[in-house]
Length: 107
Image 1 (cartoon, one colour):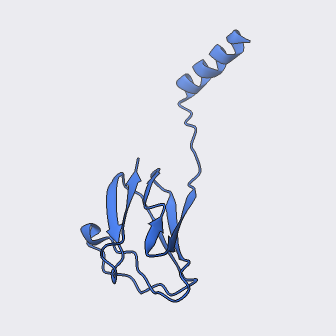
Image 2 (cartoon, helix red, strand yellow):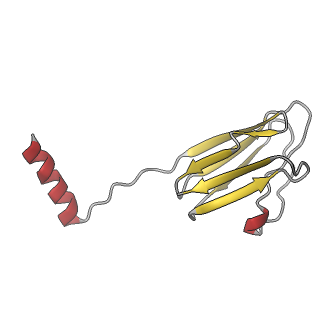
Image 3 (cartoon, one colour):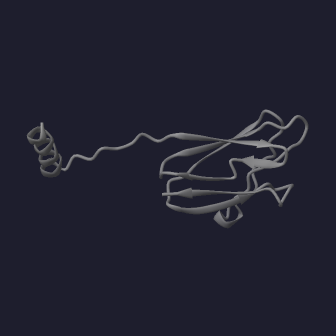
């Protein structure tokens, strides 16, 4: 058995095969004036979907440090999606409620 594992490792090394992980989607809910979870860690190429679960309140997901303009407000039931292709830490806040904070860390 160990010989087979060693052979497979040698083949991957010699042929330059790379095992890739398909991108995933992470969900963040907006509820009771909070991002839940507020801080997430994802891989390059992953996407985050924020869903407004409030009953009456509007929100936004604003990445000021990225230089992006504030997106349209999300009313109850609306979603906002962002794909992250670069590594780093990306703090965000709710445009109309600046005390609502979160961050996305991309590995």
